[in-house]
Amino acid sequence: MKEIATKTMSEFADIYTAPPRGISTGGRLHAFDKSICEQKLLQGSSYTCSQNWWSQDLLSSVAPRTPIPTSQISSLKNFMFQKSASSDFLYDLPDRLAAVCVRVPNARFDVVSNIGKLQRCSPDEEVFAVALAWADVMAQDTISDAELAAWTKLFADAEYEFKVLQTGLDGWYHNQRMRQQINQWSASLTRTPLPMIFDVVNFKLDLEHKDGTTLSAAAVARNYQDNVVQSSAAEAFTDAFVDNALTVHKRMLSDGEIREVVWGIECKWGHAAPLNSVYKLLALLVRFDLLIDELHVLWERCTPEPNQYQSQ
Image (cartoon, rainbow, N blue to C red; front, side, top):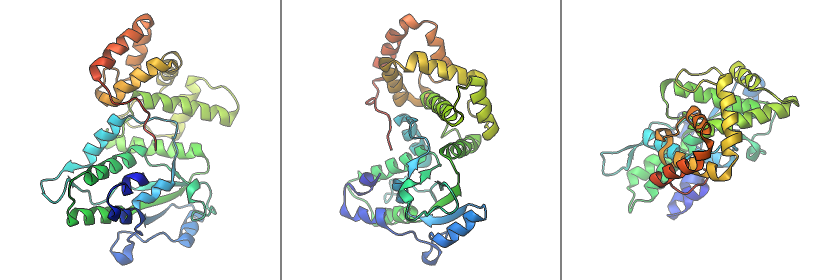
């Protein structure tokens, strides 16, 4: 993300390196304080502070193996940033950006010295959507002083929440809880089929690595249900859903040619894609002999963007 922040005009570098505003300089929250952070975490609470939004460039994702289609990032950006009627602004800016949740492995962990080892639990799509909107602003021929000041203020007054989540699996559960809560009032972060499938596959692998045994689809689903309250607006994480996702991954997505085509369609159309559910992908397996030909027809109609997984 640093390249997005600083790749054009030299004055943009200040946005990336600017210190958090803090209450003393007109911000909403106090700037990070190491001693208070440790005290809060030792008490079993989370610690919230003001931080530069771009500091999360130093954080890794709790779900690094789950690809994110470019269509979902663009869709979320359009949801978060509406075109402005003002000639001074490209977008109407929100009062604040979504809070950044940071996983800390234990209460005595030295956050300052080991910030590069911390993980972001909040959804990656939100980060990429904001970065994409900022890239749109930088692509303008001119940027007004008012617009630059507004973005600088927005980035410098981001909310960070540090929370003890001992294992990577704990961090992933928290990520899923955040997604489910958001899905209850907005479908903007609802996974498209392929990320959902990779979530299931990676979750199963992590559980099996932790327990040292092979798990059934029912056991995987039950573990998820025990740790995450599900939204009625999202795909239910049931035994059947897990079993179908694993089947599609094994019989369809393990084939590089098929995976490339399905991914290209999803990157182009997102939730509006013809294959917009795990169950529709599963239905194609019934006619597997025709699968390659049918997918290539869809591929040619979509003329998708380059087939690359969205990376951090």
